[in-house]
Length: 494
Picture (tube, helix red, strand yellow):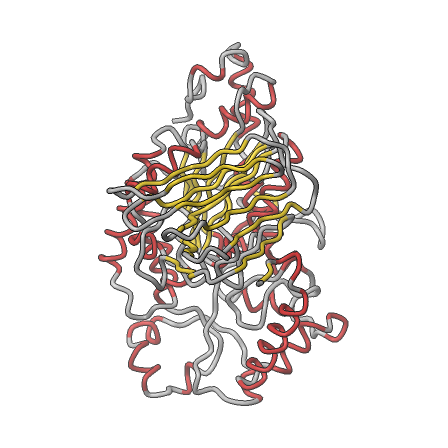
């Protein structure tokens, strides 16, 4: 039996030791030790606030103290772009909502870990109500997936596949777990009390078999064999603390996702679905019919796309081909959720130190952006181990990806936020790493828990930056009671 987050502390400890050993081999041990022993960490920036801000962003972000979260004054989003989201918030606040507000957030490892999204979820649910966890990935599909408040277990031989690395049939989660033996079981447990209802998404199609879905005392046997591929959602409206899928053994059973809810008709439900190392290209393996069905079932009021880091670190990225794939992703989202607001996030800052930098030089290497000449012939310089590149720097394609995403957002009426600017621009990842307390990991790509929470609070502030104005306009027009009749604000900004 393999266990999920809530019951795998020993495995997690062993995994942590392996990661430490790997970092030591790469020359990172000194830096990692400093990051773990906070009191001995050298401080290069005067305060965490300085790690968050840049002077050029005074009109966008400010802090209210060295330990405060960044607050977004005006991230450039007009109320009209976020009006479906604001309308749903207004109904929650005015007590007229008849269903939860749902947010769907797709992305890479930053989203898979649920640190950034977890903070946005916490803040939204604290203000507007908690409508439950909603859709989650099945089981434990990769080491960096987390669903705080839940643990997973599996018995038997389950094949784990995801749309980044494996051919297969995927819905919006981008992952699947498949087993055929009658000893195979997959289970989810709530660590914070019972849920009011649960649902499991199973793949229907040729070669599939029967499964038994169990929640509390409720058992449902279902057949998933079919001539054509589709998704079967098995709903169990029963109060329970655990959910289980049992394989009967007469064919394959493929689990695409599962969800639990607390039964509240009002509040926020924030669904984060991320795959480590994923890019927007990863979504090209989604089965369009399945993904469309999943999005339609979620009926999101807001969709957030959080890709770009892995694309930007790919020096061979074909930007034209990438643009076409991203356009296909937007077409999928907008066709399945035509009334949802759309936010596209530009990736956070990320820095690279070339592999030819060895030993102690890696731990002490500074960070400095590339100049125009270095960008122009970057690949050639990197190939010949040019000493001028022996420092942390942002790969040249990363900012090109941000520019492309901004243009795509403009074409589709989406809101675009550049998370790198919120951090402080080029080399802000290095400053976040060496701030007190540290806000990033030594890889210069991933944020730690506190850094992720700060970005989450910045996204929350950006989402809410125009809400009060929208609410006041709606109140002035006397439309609080009829907010559900129109997704547009009474007064649009020019």
